[in-house]
Image 1 (cartoon, one colour):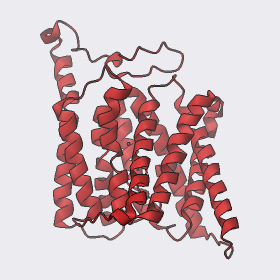
Image 2 (image 1 turned 120 degrees about the horizontal axis):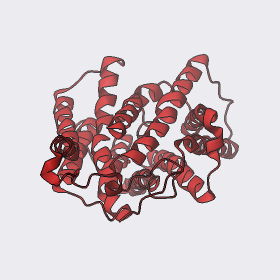
Image 3 (image 1 turned 90 degrees about the horizontal axis):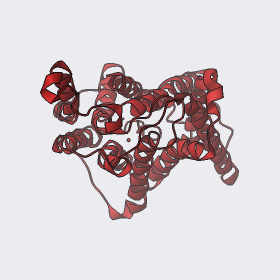
Length: 332
């Protein structure tokens, strides 16, 4: 249950991304992301000792966080925002589908696939508004968006597949990713000189909120959730993000909720429930342990490849709306 609560906390934080990123949509993408990620890294300064991780772990963390954002921003330069957002939002589905590849002991059931498919359908309706047009002229952008989805889903699964590391290390991942983003922004400014940018107090407020929430704390809670939970269930739940993002825009941003969004809401909720059937079965088996020979029907940590907390012995192993295109979709 802790993993589900952490997943929902992450989803709630990511649901604010569209609203907050809209406030800095006039700033260059790599600048906004760089500042926000650096601030997100500073969130983890209290656990700076945890930043000392093997180079391979650092590569996975920075490759996931920076790699996802860089691929997403590049995709937006080569394809329309709606299509890019939709394709990069394949990451929850990829988390579900790739779980057996990373953890052979974890098999996919029909309800996992059905839940992911329902969630994907609902997310597609939310993001596209029922209007979707794929043009081969934008193929490079589509491929970059798919690469972003693969980068985030692979990072999410690798965090529980590689040697265990403390969640506090995510702060170092964010800071390194932020510095790389700022470096790219600086190179772009050198290559294409322009007037000096003026970042107002209003802009800084939004950047700080981004860094503290959807591009900061959310990465910590996401890491903690994945280390404790079943990625097949968490992947299905992740499709709640575009739904809640839309609701935030409706309630705070003054947008209207269309009938199409209502239908998408039903699909996403159905997908989350269907994809999480394991939770209900587990609760039932816990209430009736005698039905399984006195055991929880094999629902121990080893069944899902869970990492233990650092210091314990690791068990053997047998992924937003389109309104704020340049930052939305992080994995949220």
